[in-house]
Amino acid sequence: MITEETCPECGGRLLNEVICTYPPIPAKRCLKCGWSWEGKQEAVKTVRFDPPEEGDMKDITYCSNISCPFNDCDRHPKQLKGKAGIASFADFAGTCRRYISWLVDEVKEDQERG
Image (cartoon, rainbow, N blue to C red; front, top):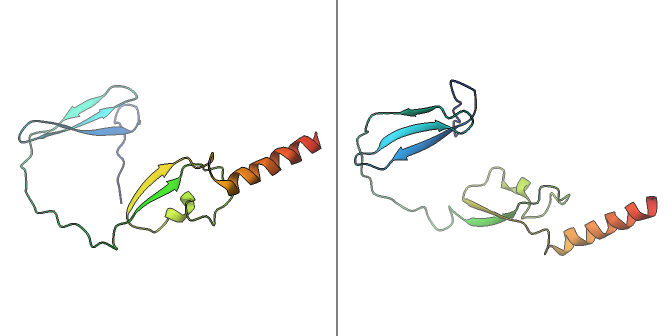
């Protein structure tokens, strides 16, 4: 789970930053009111990165068009729930034949109504 911290002054979201010194210094900044905090230099722990097995992490590009009614599409953002991997987003609305066909039908119905 990811914890999102809020500003103690205004309640806005805090941006987590790292001041690039060695060792690094953790910092937080509020984009809403400008409040900021700098911590003390933290120790650095070096660990070996073991990439996940080939089947564990998949890079899947999902459609960013949240108005699409086709929840059953494997690119719809609702399909993301419960999946592990790397998620990328792109707007497929201009190239998805199923969505364009639906949109044309919606425009025709709208024109017929009024």
